[in-house]
Image (tube, rainbow, N blue to C red):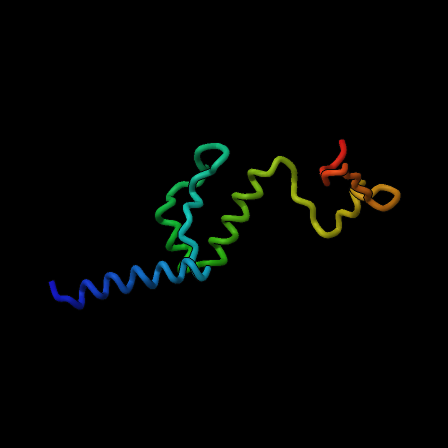
Length: 102
């Protein structure tokens, strides 16, 4: 094996690591769910093709998977207040140590 093959393999590895560190590509395993121990979608290794060649489809699939795990629908811009702010300003009472009072 020529020395240039070894240098090429190491170079590709360094480029992949650098691209991951800079956020150009995401190599984390999204096919595993931390709460349920698995995912409903299959072909985890094959999804890298979508991430590279169809990034919009890949991101849409991730968003769909994330929304399917939510307990309630995510709020949208036109939903309004939903009673979060009440009648006046929000006040958070703290004790002497800076911990919130219950």
